[in-house]
Image (cartoon, rainbow, N blue to C red; front, side, top):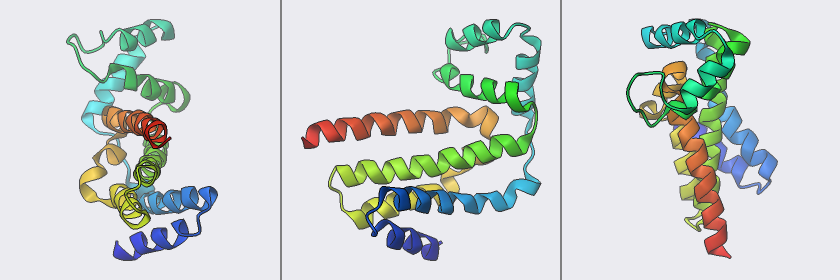
Amino acid sequence: MAYAVSWVAAVVNTRSRRSEGLAFAALAAVYLLYVPDVQLVLDDWWLFQKFARAGDWREMAASLVQNRLWGSFRTNGLSFLGVYGLWGLAGARPAVYFVVAVGLQGLVGYLLYRTLARLGVGSAVATAAGALFVVLPTAHNPVFWFPSCAHYLFSAVWLLLYLYSVAGTVAG
């Protein structure tokens, strides 16, 4: 893992936005080794069953937006619109969800790096934080359990985009 983080740091030091993004994508791509073994879990099947029984797609989308799917209030209902869209495109193919989750995991690591760098934390610390997020075992649960845990990655993307924007406003 230390080698992977130092490789990302070396690529990021080239100061090219494209190379920075590619470095985080390459780091996240390590997860793709698991694609042959990826399976859906019970919670995913429950969610897909709800999607299948919805009938009209507009009804399900409204249910997600209005937070009525679970029968109780949850703060993550809106994040499941993305999962519902993927389900409409890919059905119950676990590899598709996994690859999307890997992409989001890499994006979150990259956005964390860019936000910390914009805040002036320092390139080495920002790179380490972003790279460690991507590969840290405690941060990859949503990657392997994406349909039911997608809200963690979607929320992180929106939060980091917001913080990046605020950091740019504060920095001048």
